[in-house]
Length: 110
Image (cartoon, rainbow, N blue to C red):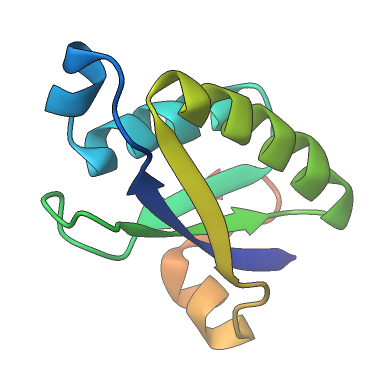
């Protein structure tokens, strides 16, 4: 299992509708869509919704999921005028266990 912490920020907005949307909202919309296309991936927000540079932990059940997820996420974020950076590429076992991620189902426990 691999965990990564992603940060997001707004590019210079060219579209007024994109500029009105919060970075957090656009990032979470893109993450949710990217995760729906990639089984074995879940996420947890680490910052408040109004943070202009939100941070999100994304957990992968296998290494092979990371590159396809990243490519798809970047394409989705571009539609929202948002860029992404990986702040940290591995998260400790205790943090993954605390997230409630279930390796068998590939999702967080309810």
